[in-house]
Amino acid sequence: MATKTKKKSAKKKAVRKSYVPGDFELRVGRSKTGLGLYAESEIPKGACIIEYVGPQISKDEEETINSLYLFEVNARKTIDGSPRWNTARYINHSCRPNAEPNIHKARVFIHALRKIKPGEEIAYDYGKAYFNAYLKEVCACPKCEAKRSGKAPKKKTLAKKMAGKKATNATAKKKKAA
Ligand SMILES: [Zn+2]
Image (tube, rainbow, N blue to C red; front, top):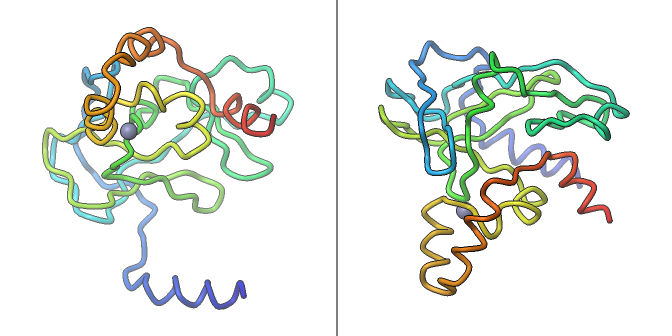
């Protein structure tokens, strides 16, 4: 069964992905929820935008570290993306993302899902576990804002309260397991 799925995706991938970030102008700027990463030049669909970098931490450290930017690459490797030189850490979540993370040789690269215009904020989907644990009530993406304003305006207060609280992917994972 696994072979079948593999074949299918291989067919779909006509163009091979590049894992060398392009020379795009990026800017860290104010977003709805704090800071975000913005495109300053046009990024073509499928382009490699940036690598998510940081020191590798052990499984033990993962349990105790106080970082908002843990990225689980695989069962053995987690990156602590909190250093400021990891510009990719400024990329926010969106339920309608224009980018996506891809793991290649145990490294994390962010690719454009579609053409991204200058001035546009770059965002990717942080995943279901993280979303359900921390973003469900506060997600500021257009899709969620529309959903909330149409349904329950009361939740706005809660959203504001929770916006200040951030947590780690590691905690999200733990919560899911519990
Ligand atoms: Zn959303």
